Length: 216
Ligand code: AMP
Image (cartoon, rainbow, N blue to C red; front, side):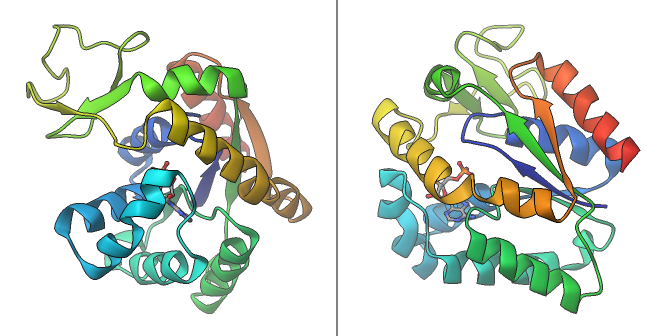
């Protein structure tokens, strides 16, 4: 099964992708995570994209398309993947269609996670994750059971993304509406788009996505 989670920053794509990965044996492909790893490693690509990400703008289509093209050909993607953060432009979506056609594969579902813009700033500025296992938390909505200790792995180290601040969030939302939202009619036209209520509780959102996948 090949799936795209589509929605603005803070919609919960990463949280749901991790759940689906565990439940369905699919691989989560987060282009944001790949780029952050490139920045942390100090690679050429990482140095190229660091300032762009900090401004909340989109990295060029060429870089992103090459990155995902390499990744989906790896053996662990053979049974299916969940794209989280890609595609973000029409050019990326068209390139993905071409890559999949060349590989004899197709997209099964594109799930739009619908959320109110007003809720997103608070969701994003309060979020942090375990530095060791990546489990996600939030200052107000999702605290660890024991303060300062990760529920999943017991680590006491946490990190916050540099671009999860109020100014950058505004640019990221603008980029979403201008460049990524046009993908909704693009995929609707292909008959693969379904929407879920991203404002619902995390478990409820998972159930809604499962229902889409079951019906597909
Ligand atoms: P994310 O973790 O998905 O919110 O991505 C963090 C940042 O990485 C974005 O604000 C962009 O600067 C960059 N990025 C991630 N995926 C893409 C993509 N598919 N196209 C362009 N830029 C991307």
